[in-house]
Amino acid sequence: MDRFSIEILERTVKLAIEAMPPDENPRLVPCVVTILDYIKLPDPAGRSALWSAVTELSEIARVNCQFLIAARLAPIARQLGELSQSSDVA
Image: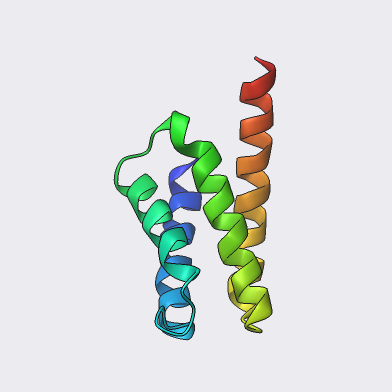
């Protein structure tokens, strides 16, 4: 993932926490923790877990009518999905 995508992801996670409080959305916490851990210490081996967390967070945002958050996460999830598919082939 490039630095720009990581920056967008980090800002979107912060926005998600503000818009969807974790105490009202218990599924949010594991996603946020996984994403922030990856941002702090990027590890190619953790891309699959990151993809799962971003995809789940996007779904949570859609369910909670947070469409801006879901729209920001969609291209990142797509990029991560493509990266994991290309690493599976190699």
